[in-house]
Length: 321
Image 1: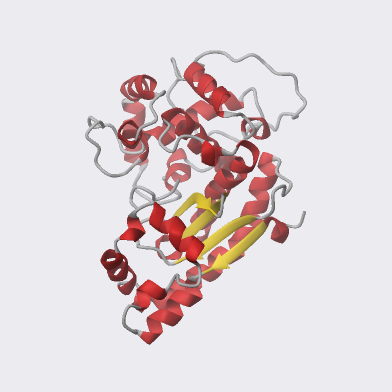
Image 2 (image 1 turned 180 degrees about the vertical axis):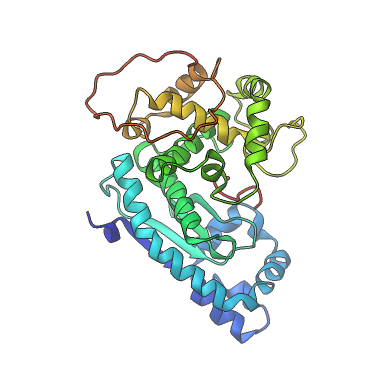
């Protein structure tokens, strides 16, 4: 299937820019008026429910019109190739219809996320938070991996705050980006190229036994309080000083362990019970991530016989998912 047939893009940036130029009273509240389904999806997460806060955030972005338009053009150009690459990596041929992507001006908090829209899973990209094109491409692939993963395993029905499934879904999406663009250091895959995170990665390696012990203790949790220390940027009362978002690195390391015996296509079809069992089996004695940059693993045949496992072996909060 041609790349353009795998994707349907709704670009809301022109509507934002048109409203911003008019500077009419309450223009920000009408920015999404033509897209009530998108408005409902955004408000469901809470950030867009505060009308005054939304107005203030959007009003602060009005003077960036040319920049926002250029960023929207860049992301629209990158989307078809990025979604097609992920579809090929995960063996998705377009079943269920094209991936829907909403390109919008957000609240200057999150760069991209995957979320429910009209009963399906969609890709959202907020242009005001996007970086240079090479980093945007990595973000597109990561979030597209979540949406394509949903086509094979209905991950939108998994527990929103499940620690085990979050480790797996974030690890798989990050591994997809790493295999499609090999040779970068891990912190670039985990932070989408944003600089300054080598110390974070070094701290996670140094504190690996502590992090792994905590994750193993909470792996069966499905509540927001136990999910937050591993996947969110905000302070959490249960974090106990853990490096923020350390769950992304644990998830990536665990998926790489599983990847030795399974194709990406295999992993993307696992149901939730198997994900929980496989993650619980992989976590004990999981070695820390290597300092060397891992190269792309060979693509095993989907018909390869199964090999038994060895045991061991990104709202500032929603900066990405």
